[in-house]
Length: 493
Ligand code: UDP
Image 1 (tube, protein in one colour):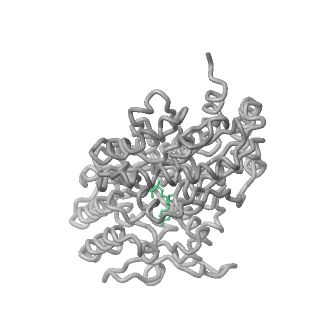
Image 2 (image 1 turned 30 degrees about the vertical axis):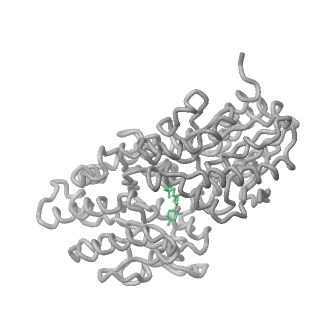
């Protein structure tokens, strides 16, 4: 049933303000809070979603709820529940349909189930809420709640949708039709990109980008020793000297030439500390475009080995020693996801068939998932050790890996077909955007030209970092929420 979630705080507003380069953003946020806090006086802001753990929303909510409280807004986080086992499979199906896949036919019993569970959770919520409270409902699972809250509560309901597809098909139409009656009960909705707004929200929707937490383990600064320490302790690099701390319990693994998975620093060091490195970190999903990226990189090497070498000796050397790191979750942690297992297996198959010299220069890396903290630090260190980060997704809702790289001053290679990355990366300013992630030739040329241009990479990285600072940090996200809340609570005439 709907229950409030206690917060595990990572950092307080004071901690952010104590970081020199974050202090100005905190100041602006505090100034803007002064305008909105009086409007929320005597009201509680309820954030409602469907899980306390796993997934981007659950990861982002603690930071946001904590900061809102620090700013003087009474904020609570509630997770809905269901005693009916068919409910979450149904909402999972709705989720997939919004992404354009799955069985688009709903029957009456499914509509009734959704209604029953929504009513049941709304009854619990109504016991906790006070008149005039603000309700922010995240994603489709709890979307039905406001329809069943007593009218005299005069709740101010806003729907935050974190998913979407920039295309329409029978699947997306079915999902949005299913949700339409519940949308009528909202004053306003928030989406991550304009392309995701269904027609019935067109006149009452706002865009707010997802955001990252600059002090989270995945994004915080790493001192030189800490960075090398994380790489060495996780087995991503051979330790260059004696270390203070022992290796992690679960080490990063890599695929070897025969397809075997073994510790990443076992045979030969990947070279994260010295070589030019191109990295993509993602779930093993076909839509992440690992395969065309690997093929493009292999072709760069193949051309070089066949004597098609650039005139510039530095670039020749760069292409000779550059390595590609394709990293994702340890497959044993995704046992319940046969599709990802399959994608991973076919990537490995293709890798095993490559020429040995090319295999040496490609590391398919599996990151252990047992410790969230260690996994986040590994992702952080890998991104920081990269010359450039690729996100070759065929489709991408937003692409936090792009944001994470931008924040770390790392230029990004992505494509303008994927909706999320094109909201973030401006081609030629923050990195490079190819037109087609499946065009291996276009990818190869972009990859080589980025590698050939150290001054460009530096400029793209700087611009990317500035853009992430201004647009995609949690402070901006909260400020956008403030603008929206001010508008829904005291709309201009
Ligand atoms: N990620 C991770 N460990 C991994 C692979 C990915 O922590 O082994 C993280 C990655 O850093 C990012 C998130 O998972 O924060 C993926 O979010 P994104 O929006 O890029 O794609 P999604 O997986 O939601 O499609």
